Image (tube, rainbow, N blue to C red; front, side, top):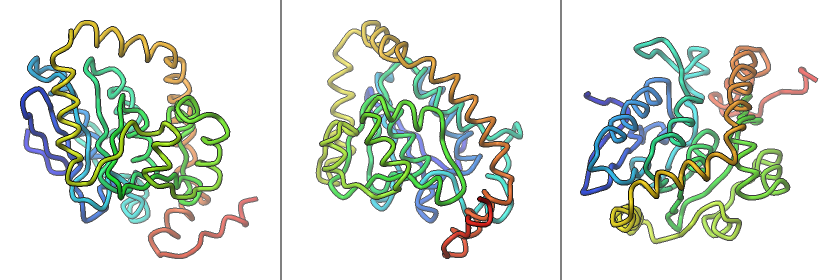
Length: 261
């Protein structure tokens, strides 16, 4: 498959999936999600792949979430081959693929991009990386894994702070909170992520597969919450309130949400 929004390469036991939209800070549209789903399944089917690295092009952004400019322009995230925007399915696939998935956070991880890194099995961040949520600012939310699983990772109080205050946090903050596993200089990011895959490639693939399923089993009920949240977000996304957030972001102004109280 020829990808437009991502790149895919296999280096030894590591498959590296790169969101390749640096002009949009690696924001994802529906096509990006569709291509990531294809690439994760491609890596799943490749028996030589023992770990997957997810990253973004350049060193400005890992991923800034859904393409809000696209949403402001068209009211959605654009077309796909099957007509669906499968964001929640992508999140589930990252959990279901039977090899460890490593987020190599090469810059800003915000909004849906923040959720993607949280769902990955391990996260390694460049020293200049920053982390934040943005949903309530742009008329969006993730009430599924993006909230409930985040609370498992950093604790309820910290997760609520991240979602309610929308502050930005440094890579060192993320390390201190257990939000990432390691922080490295930016030039060492991808080599370090690949080295983790190389290390795990020496271990029993069956044992690692069982361990991943065991870890996920404890939070599997959150998949149902994620689907419920997706239905709610689909309903909310086309409302005047949600579109005010998207338009304000595109027009670089403060949104006027007071009218929706």
